[in-house]
Structure formats: structure tokens, C-alpha cells
Image 1 (cartoon, rainbow, N blue to C red):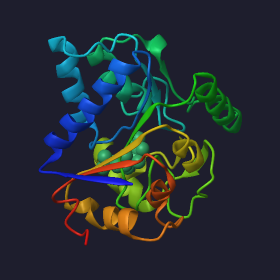
Image 2 (cartoon, helix red, strand yellow):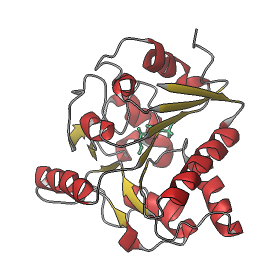
Image 3 (cartoon, helix red, strand yellow):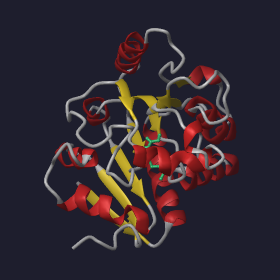
Amino acid sequence: MEVVIVPDATAGGELIAEAIAALLGRKPDALLGVATGSTPLPVYQALTAKVRSGAVDASRARICQLDEYVGLPPGHPESYRSVVLREVIDPLGLSEKSFMGPDGAAEDVQAACDAYDKALAEAGGVDLQLLGIGTDGHIGFNEPCSSLASRTRIKTLTEQTRIDNARFFDDDIEQVPRHVITQGIGTILESRHPILLATGAGKADAVARTVEGPVASVVPASALQMHPHATVVVDEAAASKLK
Ligand code: F6R
């Protein structure tokens, strides 16, 4: 596991946008796995700036979602499909056809999960998977004690994650869905290059346990230690509890 400490979130965004740009230079139709939440926004902003300046051609890039809420009505502004359309697909000038994600409104949720794993494999696998980390160490929405071999499936959010995400739902935890579809840890580990970005002091404990603790399902992100090519990018605040 490679750990890179950067001064701040903006620098982290720039560094990862550079990695994506280099990948698209080598493989213009690379499949990019994107996370939602606050942390990856500087990455999307830096990448968008590169595309708009003509420094990067992302026109053939393919984008896939990491996770999705279950039960939000189609088109809800906080569904992760809507967020990725707003923060990634539209700014990069891509079409919805280049974008795939699990169907959070499916009647048969497990069938939707299986179909998504199959679609990722048929697309050739994820070339670069951007990840954030929860304060409890989750990646995707693989909450503590998720199986390290798990596949895409439905999960129940912990109370802590619902509290953390209430800011996207008028600070009202009751509006935060209880269930999500998430790529499993086993699915995430199949990506060729997972890159976890963590910024801010609130992530310092989770980062220390991810990087320096034992590989354990109580800290799902620690599974990245088993990946031959995982990168963890942290700002100084998030790195503050590393030895
Ligand atoms: C979201 C996701 C989550 C977030 C994590 C951190 O797609 O996969 O694991 O990355 O909850 O969220 P933020 O970045 O908002 O602190």
C-alpha cells in the first residue's frame, strides 16, 4: 500500500486528477469507478478543469458508481446516480450512456446487485476506483464487519453513517435511507488501482487503523492492504494519527 501525504484537499484532488489523466492517456476508454460524498469533489473539479483546458481528453472515459441508496425515488437529487450525473458526467461532458450503476429502485434488489457485478466484469473491470472513507472505516458502504470477500449486495447503514450523511438531507436523519447497494469489498479489490482519498481530522482515526492496523473486517478499508496496487492519499490533518 502506497501512502501519499499532501498538504490539503485541493492538492489531493489535483494529484488524483493527474493519475486519472495519465490513465486516460494510456487507455482513453478506461473504466473509472467514482465515489460520492464530499471528499472526492476536489478530484472531480481538478479533472474537469483539465478537460475544459484541453489538457485531458476524457471523451471516451467510462464511469461506474460505487454504491447507491435503496428506496429513493428516481431522480431524487441525493441519489448517487443524480450526484454522479451532476458532479462527474455533466462537468466532463460525457453522456449517460458512458455511465453505469446499480439500480437502487429495483424490485429484486439482489438480482440488481448480481447484474451490476456482471456488468462490471463484462465491461472489462474497473481500471481506477476512487474511494472515500467513513469515520467508521467503511469503503463504499461496506460497514464494519462486512465480509472482506463480499460482492455487490444490499447493506444496512450504521447509525453513525446516517448521522454523517444527514447533512445531505436537510440535517434530518429520518430522511437518510437505511439501506444501500454497495460494491462489496471483494468487488472493490478487483479494481486495478484503488485510490482512497481522506481529508480532514475527522478521518485521522480511520486512516491510522486502515494503514497501520491489522487487516480486519471491523475496519473494512484495511482490506486495501491486501491489494497489490492500492494508493492512499491523505492530507496532513487526516494523516495526523499515523505513526
Ligand atoms: C460514497 C461512499 C462512502 C463515502 C464515505 C465518506 O459513495 O462510498 O464510502 O466515501 O462515507 O464520505 P465523505 O467523503 O462525505 O466524508
